[in-house]
Figure 1 (cartoon, rainbow, N blue to C red):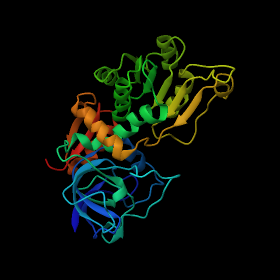
Figure 2 (figure 1 turned 45 degrees about the horizontal axis):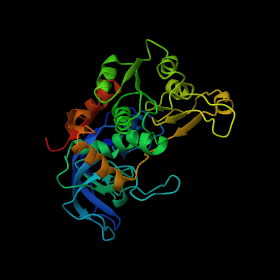
Figure 3 (figure 1 turned 135 degrees about the vertical axis):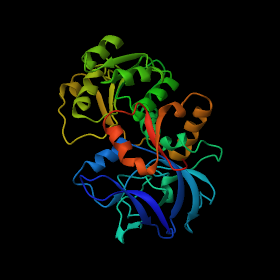
Length: 351
């Protein structure tokens, strides 16, 4: 079958929206007709990286209806509503590699094990998670990346507990998801750090108790002042070198002794190749530095996030602040790159 998709044909060029060719699913694959897809900053990193393989398909969070499945797929049926994500349903060891989907463009195979910037997607069934049929077909798409990444870092990586202090550097879609989960877990204080006053004000709607504009004051000093010595947890959802290097000194210090452990810095945003850290933070203060890469148990967590949304505790509808059509994908990418999206934007395939 043919279906329209956004194709990254060459480094430095705009995405091409054109028909791609989709074969019948392999035994472990499904075809999903998408209703919506999130627009994630990770794809901008791919587009702006000259080493990224092309031609390729992009996107990794979407909601759609299953229309075909392979013979080995048992957890999905045709007609099911499901989220397409980038984290495998079943726990894996290490960084797995999977073959391209088999989708082609002008007879050339397209790179990408999963993709959602397309009307129809052909993906391994492990990347597809069934959700209740009455779930919102549009807001739910961001659960597939923004929510699982940000909220999962707080819930599963840091394991934040009530009354522990949290600082979140960067309050885009991922940072806001982290902030919401910190509120659900009753952390305090909840500090939002960003360079945009507009985004910081927006973050207060999602539970930020304090805000810091890092262009106007030193965020490390400000966090220490607010928390009387440093946060229990600081999360970098931006991935810039400056934020990579700020989160560790922003957490509280420990000292000598088996249980005198400092706070935890968690790197969530996609980083560059280098950063510089003072080793004294680790040795003398027992501070901790961790990465968090899609910390989620999809089958269980996706249901939880959608339930929290229905209960009014995880406002997905407020996180989605702008919608685009597929043909406007380049504008959607430009708006995201230029800081014009306060929450998360989505592609609406039904509009």
